[in-house]
Length: 79
Image (cartoon, rainbow, N blue to C red):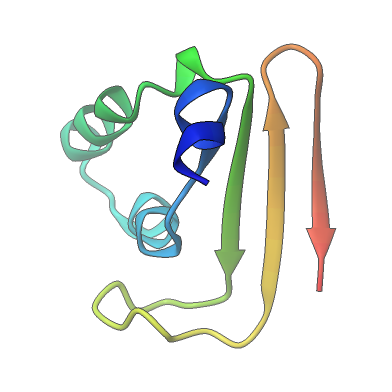
């Protein structure tokens, strides 16, 4: 996993995705996204759920996977 992820694919942690979705501080979001170096990855996998609580890792009931490729495609895989 680490070898694949480090070169071309970034698999976002669910807690990071929830934080990005729910945080309203632009400075925090900019800093976090910059540190992830997403522009260096070919494919970004983002697990998304219907959680509204940033303090509970296993909250939310419905999951979707966002698959994003720079300038190529994006799609949702819905469970």
